[in-house]
Image 1: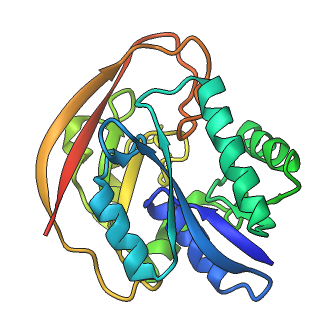
Image 2: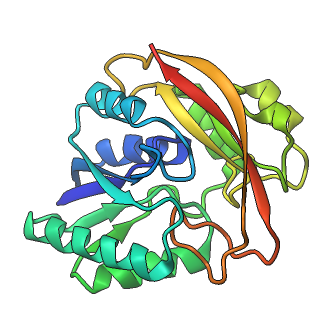
Image 3: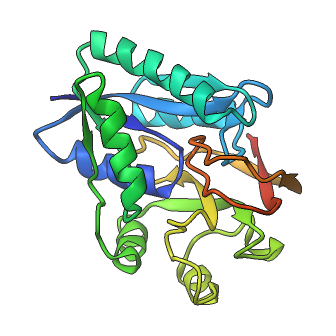
Length: 239
């Protein structure tokens, strides 16, 4: 079955891709990534497009970018996504792979949107214990760096850290070890799905504050909030 993966460049999509590539039922033939047209970076993660392109080259799967405004409305996002899914359906893609783990509403939303174009959602990590997942991720040889943290959950010191056993031990108890509630986002630069590691240098830590959306945004599926919220981003510089 011909599939594409919703690729964020982070650890969950990397682990989901690893498992799907090892499932003989699927042939993964495209990476689909939301990018900000204004900043030329992966939406919410803040990673430069050049590094995203290097990931795709190292994996050996074609990359397709879904170019969005910096903070698209739900309507704008759905219009762009529906056009993209119709195009993929015409290319005979039948399955869409996601790295979601336990957010039920998000899973239902994804399934309902795909049903409109006759495609099926695949969730290789669904309902797995997140502590087991992060240890599996590390044990498989994946390497990832935290590129974005939500200040509601973590302070600036976590931004730019490599995820290892020390990182896991330092996380506050209210933070999911996989960041499934949007606590942090990552960039994977090496692992079993890559033919070569991605070279980069750490740049500056940047703080950005966003106004609370009037409705839930589907841009990387930020949670609906009623107050302004801020993020720290670690800029990664291609080498």
